[in-house]
Length: 213
Ligand SMILES: [Zn+2]
Image (cartoon, rainbow, N blue to C red; front, side, top):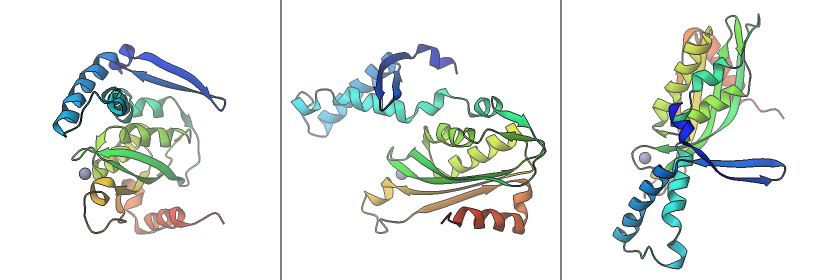
């Protein structure tokens, strides 16, 4: 979106044959970094000591990366790879990695998303579904809204006969903050159209729990 043009390439390095590109907005980085120097001081640290000298800037860059989904348009990503096709059976993309941050504590939550849709004249390039998940996940989120946003984006853009989204995540704000159930996983789900049908939904749940072995 509009903000992207202010981003300048920060560093490009080749790692194992692929190019890692970090982009950041330098105004944003220095603003966030200045606050983190204050935060370090408030925590009783000495921001000037060797190990912390570059920490505010690193944190600012990490935060900008972890929220870069604000600058991207998931519907546009889908629209670039939609194809007319008669196929009308359920398409399932499972075990999509999710890395997000809860908006209440700004701590990570992470796990897996499983997405299905039933085409209604159009299919979409399979790699675009994980892209949509990632774009919404790379914002401050709650898992419930993340689940609904993915569903709504696919429903409104692709207009399929139905969409199903299941997300299973561990929340560090639960496991790091002394809550007893440290290994608990939160599951959320959202459905539209034909997935309101018990049989269709059961088929989807069977497919995402089945293993390939
Ligand atoms: Zn939280």
